[in-house]
Amino acid sequence: MTTSWYKRTQKGISTPTEEKREVPDGLWYQCPECKKVIQTSVHMENAYVCPECNYHARVGSKEYFSLLFDENTFEELDANLTSGDPLEFNDSVPYPNRVKASQAKTGLKDAVRSAAGKMNNVDVVIACMDFTFIGGSMGSVVGEKIARAIDAARARKVPFIMISKSGGARMMEAGYSLMQMAKTSAKLALLDKEGLPYISLMTDPTTGGVTASYAMLGDFNIAEPGALIGFAGPRVVKETIGKDLPPGFQSAEFLLEHGFLDFIVDRREMKDQLSSLLELLK
Amino acid sequence: MYLDFEKPIQDLEGKLAEMKQIADDSDVDVSQEVKSLEEKIKTLKKDIYSNLTRWQKVQLSRHPDRPYTLDYIENICDQFIELHGDRVVKDDKAIVGGFAEIDGNSFMIIGHQKGKNTKMRQVRNFGMANPDGYRKALRLMRVAEKFNKPIITFIDTPGAYCGLEAEERGQGEAIARNIKEMFMLKVPVICIIIGEGASGGALGIAIGDKVLMLENTWYSVISPESCSSILWRTWEHKERAAEALKLTAEDMLKFKLIDGIVKEPLGGAHADRESMYKKLKKVILDTTAALQKVDPEQRISDRIDKFSAMGVVEDLAPAAEITE
Image 1 (spheres, chains in turn orange, red):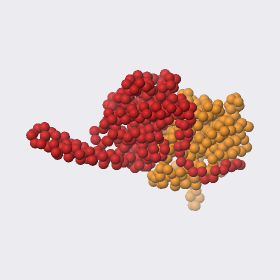
Image 2 (cartoon, chains in turn green, cyan; image 1 turned 90 degrees about the vertical axis):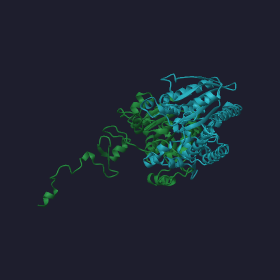
Image 3 (cartoon, helix red, strand yellow; image 1 turned 30 degrees about the vertical axis):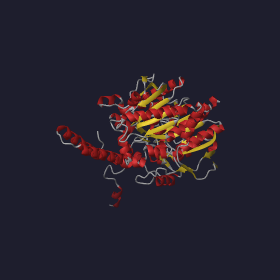
């Protein structure tokens, strides 16, 4: 009988629905945290936050700009800066090829974009990192664009908002990467001098040289719920101490508890909270 | 102690010792042979030490006999009063600091400190500072600023400590704050890499008007071993990683990421400590004197401009555009 072909006589050959990951792009989104499946449009309208479990999906500069700038209107700054190759760094792939491949894959020039515009009618300059570009790593371009974004905020006499999302310094630019920590911090010292506000928003993940420079230097250090934030990554810490890490270690909530964040902000309320804070400083 | 590439020197020096022993034990005159062997060793040393690979320089920078911060302080300064503690949590032994006197001038000297034996290496945590160390350093810099004394920092660390408590107490924040605050110090700041300059752990006390590296030291964003383990999943390719990172004093000067190199005696700083101390003392005094001629505000803005210029980028099309 042919109908028996359709019958499942063996158990366990089918994948449970909640574990199925391949949903057609542009239609459905499955939350990696609670496995709930929702329509992509619903997820997007909810600021890429799971309505079920509040999981904040990793998004990039395009999404943050559209969430924060009024009518998604902004003037992008230094959009055409790209990386040089002063070290001629070559592991398995020459560094310029790595950059080009990442550019082709992401449509981005490097791991940060910066723009000026209005947020609830408050003029701001925002720089936002893209984790999809070589792990959001900080090389000369990232450092230079952030430095110039801070300069732009100073020239326009407007607040500066930095959205960090990075694995740290970019190894392939070695000494140059390291000095981007110094460069960006120097510019923030100048911003201080002029009494302009700096909000540092840390998103999942923010680690390494980024944490040890501009990300931790905000007048206001804030983070998204659940974001991993640390100097050393959890794997390195675990190897160093030779023990398992306590649950929640290096989460935004952990940092808040230890006094390194001013508050944690839900992405859906981010724009209003940030602009209210800035209004209070006027 | 001889490093692997110093083996030929070790062999000849062994032979020389043997020969001298023979001379002592018998009446045979070997003075000619001794002299020629000594010449040979000298030539060999010159040859080896002037052709070091990057990895060999990393090895020298970690040589256990190399002078550490407190050795320089002890041998350069006429007086040193160590000051302890960050006034918040504890006294981090991986960073030392205090007021010192050199030829009648007062300085604040701060530096990473490694231990000399197993016990002290643990006490000093191998020169890997916790946030408390960076906060102590900043506290001392503020004191120096109050009394208008120049600051000298000695950098020698395999990296900031990556422990659980370091994270709890904000390792990232502590380093970040130091970097930013050091830009605004009104007094001259001279930073000298005397051994290892690993990443943020080094930079946390290395923002200065003059950043100098001793000849056989390294300074980069990551150690060759860690770089190798990231790229090739093993520590074995550290030589290749060292080459790729271009982390020597010569490289860093060529890239304009440091301001100068202090030559070491043949064989490294430990080979002739006295001349190393003498040289560094002169460098410190001369550099400070030159910096003190500059107006404090000018010094700060020069410091900021110098670091702001670091990096290599290409601007494909300069004009900004309006999007959407």
